[in-house]
Length: 154
Image 1 (spheres, rainbow, N blue to C red):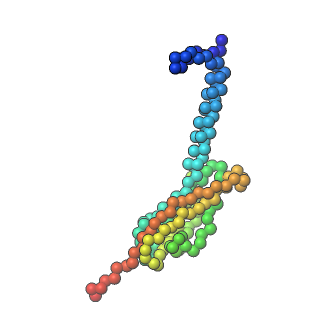
Image 2: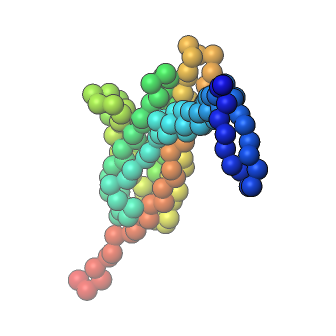
Image 3: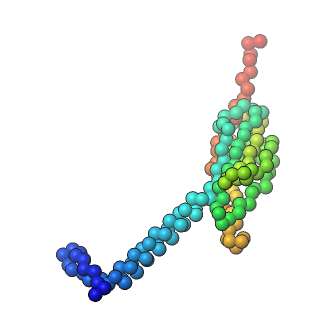
């Protein structure tokens, strides 16, 4: 006899081992699919970090763009404009792929005072031999630019 006896809410219930195995496999498959989807989305990340959030007019400020690309995808790097929001882009270094993350150093400056927003940087991720694509976005960063204090005592 391939039946299992169980008590549930005062009732005796008989289920076959085949039914139990099918339910187990279905539930395991659903959990596995959910885990794989969450894991894949966590693998692809893009962050933008600033050396500081405050500079003086004309000072240089460094940023690091860091991307963890998914195993089954390729990140298409952005083509840089002359600015990042209101900040002027002075220099961008080569893309470093020496570890599991892709990184690039950027240097900016500002010639106006105030609070400026570096917008989120969007990167295209190509998967499955270019048939599927998605986007990664970095975090936006606020930068305060201050004027140089003038010494009026002399």
